[in-house]
Length: 620
Image 1 (cartoon, rainbow, N blue to C red):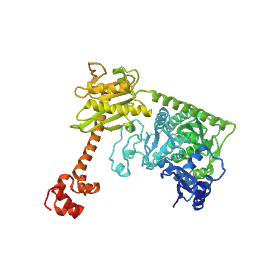
Image 2: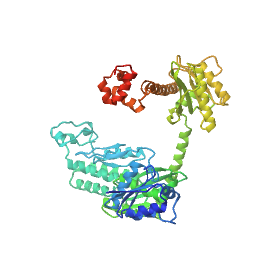
Image 3: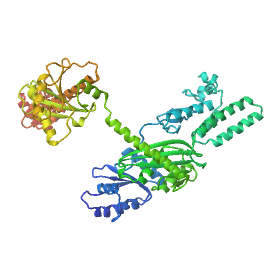
Image 4: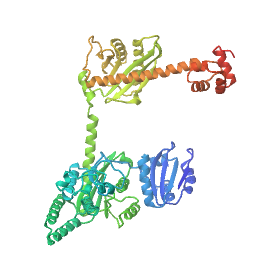
């Protein structure tokens, strides 16, 4: 059920509250705050929507900077009622993912990590994947350490004879003997389910053991394997006992390499964060039976407007929406809002009690400190990577600096081109590339005002003067390199203007002649020929071609507009809408001239048809 309440932009806050609050439902659900443009700026959930939303507008209540900025922008509130608080939690998460509201915490990984997937098939496969498909398959991870994940997969395959093929095994295909066993069967790495050499119940026991290891439940598995090994020995099944012994040795070796972080046998997840002025990082430790089996982190940008409690809460919610591994204890750095709702939701999924802990001393506090130390390191690493990326030069830019012997890298390049048709509709374009990529917001086009006839040199003077006079007046960013599409004449015209404006020689300028792809430098008679396969020449050509395309596009627009106006809108009694209707109906002015009278009357009526007949010299 959805309810919607609107507030007039001109109402004061008091009147706004007076009209809004009584209409809100008291049910559980989610609320969306919208600004004056109808954009959702915040999504929240509540046990009682009316009570929760009212708290934002209480007079005299102390609020943080984020809440004050958000409340000032609220012009519309939309609520969606749900059957329970856990249902509201899931709906809130889905809406945040879809809408990405300005004032909600938005979590992101720095990369896509792999998972281990167990397929939902009669004889499941176990393999790594980066793509999660919700088809009933089970996923474990993600694994931030790829080497550890592949070591884990090798351990599982050496312990259990699992199939590695991707054959679509069904009861029908197995009964028909559609497939043959492969080498894995002969070297005892697979028991041959493709030829029905192993039954499904026995194979699923292996899968059950795999799941236990991936969940960190190794103690009971060790005991079961050891008991089964002793039973096989007592029954004189020495070959089976030897296989079980080998399996037990591999399992114990795997367990011994896992880091022991807690003396408790509890399953625990630990959440801690680190933050600075603008960014935050949350680290999640996954501990099972006292052993660390996984670690993951999330980055939060623009976190200055978020409280640590809110960041932790949304991380916890996202984590358990994306995973089926729910522990009995969740250890947090500090208290979070709606912990009771989250606990109720997780307890329902787990089938047993969930405990939230905020430790002050002891081993659990040490776990929080360890997680926070990792978060501190990852946040510093993020800043280092960001700085390195900002300072890194793309290959084409570095090549261009080298080949043109520029004193600094040309990270921002602006390129000019002219276009006209026998001197009519004279236009120019300027395109901008930053770090070798188009910055289309900075493109500019010019309808030339002072040029008479076909004069490319005068056209280049005008457009360069107009562009950089405005740059100087508005103090906007200057380019590191200017490219003029043309030879010595166009280049000289541009340099003349730039010198008067005081921008040359501070900003380097080159000309590119189309015929031989020659590069001209100011005041040098000889051109520079770059290798045709060079990265720098390809970048210059890309700029030139983009400038040419942009200029031609603008020229055609003006030409079509001029043609349209002179042919039809120039006729007395015919306006733009009528002319448009005629062109849409008949396709061209020529077809309008040739159209039969009854066709014209059907389109624009008798009076306009008489006007057209008279204008085109046809008998009425």
